[in-house]
Length: 201
Image (cartoon, helix red, strand yellow):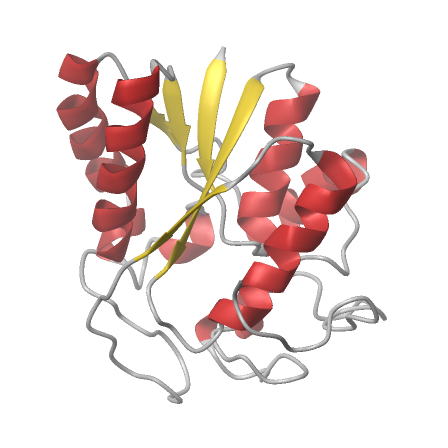
């Protein structure tokens, strides 16, 4: 089966990519730079994961979305961000006859983010089906600790993902993504010896 994973280089999307490979799917990756603060860090994670695990090119799109809450603690709400991402993936999937779109939303996201909830996922799936594509979120019922267990079972290198909303040398430790990151207690959380801060190429 052909699958496109919305791939930020964060913990959840990297786990999804490993799951797709483990299941024998034809993996296609889509990254989106929406001019957010962590884009350089995320892109470094994407590039390193591709170098290690995937020979195919990754589709990279740059778009401009209104941002809010930059630098604040807690949730950063970019209205309908995931809806835009899935729509961009659907355009590609329908054109290239890709069967499924995978997005890494999970149980930890439901409270703060409208476009991470099961009813939103169902609505997006219904919109995609007339184009011959289904939208799935294999982690939607999983807690972060359960996702960490999956990552360990798949032998995911915990030093590769960048999930912090900021683009500093180390995770900020205060944004929602850092606070929910199950790798917080690991020695290599935020340690990136292979990845200096760089610009997106």
